[in-house]
Length: 97
Image (tube, rainbow, N blue to C red):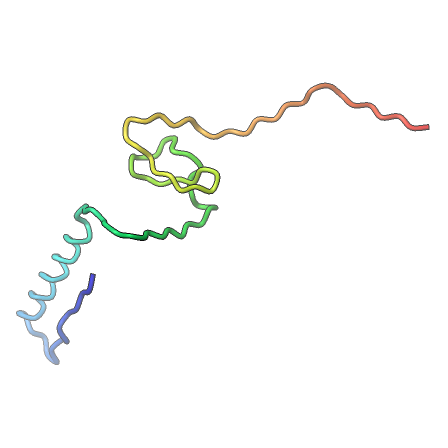
């Protein structure tokens, strides 16, 4: 999106500022309106330390990282929370002579 504003006048000009505010409102309306993106290549750069590891509790459309793959939360889909489990079985006794 190429946005260009006119050069400001040397003195305060009510008409200029009214037009500037109109253009800024229009810019924000354009930016905040959902739209479809069509492209041949889309590149995401994501810091994995800040990327959620699964879709549990996230809104549809939110992205998360799953074993190095970027995925998107789908509506009406359940996502289980991540967890780490460890187990301790028995005891090892080593003897030496």
